[in-house]
Length: 101
Image (tube, rainbow, N blue to C red; front, side):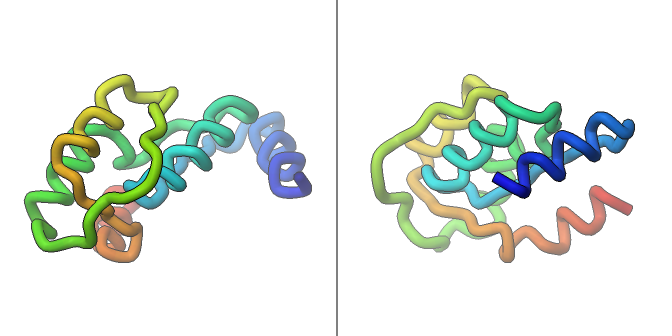
C-alpha cells in the first residue's frame, strides 16, 4: 500500500497521474484499483486502443481467465471478450512512448 500512498501524495501535489496496463483480466483488475483510489486517468487504455492493438497484433496470446469490467470504460471488457486476445504492455511500448512525447 506504499505505492497508493505515494500516488495519493503525487496527486495532492498536482501531478497528473496516467495509467496503462496489460489488456487482460488482471490488468483490468489492477486498473480498477488505481482508478478507484487516487485520481488516475487512462492512457491508451480503453476499448479503441485495445481494438487497434488487436488489429496490429492479431496473433497475440488468447485471452483467458474470468472477465472483469473496467470501471473507466464500459465497453472495454466487451471488446476484449469479443476479440479474445491478451495484449501485453510490452507489445505497445512504441505507441505509449509516442503518446507521452
